[in-house]
Each structure stands twice: as structure tokens, then as C-alpha cells.
Length: 300
Image (cartoon, rainbow, N blue to C red; front, side, top):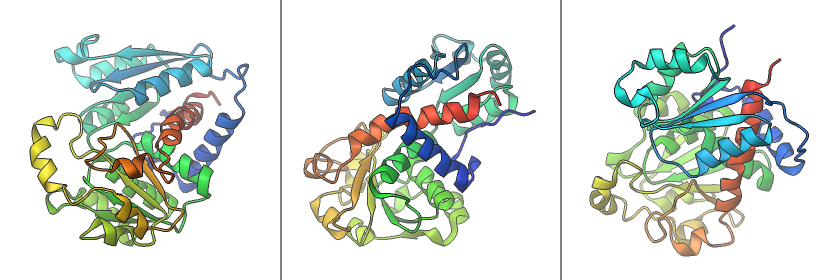
């Protein structure tokens, strides 16, 4: 039997996505130290990009469940020395129970999944960041209930986070408003596949009108530091500030996957304000990924 992978939110049905959210909430609220469903299992964690939240949440999650996690950087493996990905996937998967990759090219993760004999998890690629969306949606469900039929706003770069929000809109059935500079729009094919749920706006305030959730990300992601000045010019009118939040519903939430640059993509007034839920959102990476690990690795 082929293993079940988690490469994209589109790998889940709407029922499975909601099931993971509710399971994550249950695991968060009722932690049982004697519940160790992954005892004796090992998760290989392959990092081409540095990480705070991804590494800690997966490593802690495996520990809570009685398993172990191996941190592997390109310096530690043959991946950084030109070994074919197919060979690496076959060898690594023969020794562990699951593989999580935080990498540059999305093709690296899909190739691993093709040749791996165990579940592969996309911990982040340049195209998608589905694990973050599990945490974001858990946070919304905890505080506001089901997101079906709601309006979510993405402001800023049409990046991997934006792509995963598009996928979430498809699976969970909400409307996504996007306000991005013309040169930084999300991938056209990903947008087209989501159909009428996706709407574009010229300004953040127009996009935020009557919104239930507003989300943004840094202007220059990891690996784009050389573009910082150029991006500061392109995104100068795309900051989430008090005026943007005032255009949304009074009980709208603000999210950011972190790390954040106060005074750039979001004002300090907003990110440190009462509508911001960035720290519960960050903590929920742990709980959502524990639910995911249980879903993928528990032996049936």
C-alpha cells in the first residue's frame, strides 16, 4: 500500500481538514502524557532553510507522542553533495517512519514523495506552506467557529502562504480577497483552479471591507534579501495598519506566520493589538502538526 503524504492542503478532503482541526484542538486542551501513539517511531526532518517554529513544533510533537525526530541539514547528509533525490528518498525512508522537508524547490518534496516508502510532509517550499495553514485554521476555529462562508483577506506577496490560503479557501469553502502589487501576484494556475472563491482588489482597504480574518507575511522572504529595497518600494502601500483593520468586521482577527517586521508589512499597533492572534497561531503549529503526525503515522 502506498503511504499517505501531505504535500498540499489539496491532499485533504474538507472532512479530513476539519477533522485534523478538531483533533488538534482536542490534543491542545487535553494533553495526556501517557498517550504515546508514535512510541518507537522516528521522523526525519530535512531542512534546507533555517527554522524556529517548524523545527520546534515537529520535534516537540514527536517527543510528546513518544517518538523521536532527527534534524538533518544539507551539511549533515549527501543531499548537499549531489546525491539523486530519488536515491536519498529510498534510503532515508527505509530507516524512518516519516519524512518532513523544509526546502526551496517544491519539486524536492514531490520527488521525495514519489520514491519514499513512508509518509512525506511538506514543512515548507517556495510554492506552498500547508502546515502553517493547519495552525491558522485551528486558531480561527477555536476563536470564531467554522470558517465556511467567511471572508479572508490576504495582503502582500502572492507567495507560498498566499498559495496555501488559496488552497484552504478551496477545501474549507471560504472567500479569499487578495491585494498584491501587480508584479507579485500569486501563481495564475493555482488561482484559476480555485474558481470564484478568489477575488482581487487594488488596495488593502478595499480588500478588507467586511472581512473576518486578515493575514499578511513579510515583504521579503528567506532567500529574497537582495530584493529587500526593491520590495520595500513595491509594497509600501500594502501595510496592514489600523485603517485596514477598521475596514473589516469589528471582531476580525489578524494573523501572521512570523517572523514579522513591525513597521513594514504590519504596523506595531495592529500586530500587538487586541485583534492580533499571532502567538496562539504560532503555538498551534505544535498541536496541528501533532494531529497531522497522528493522522499519517499511526498504524491502522
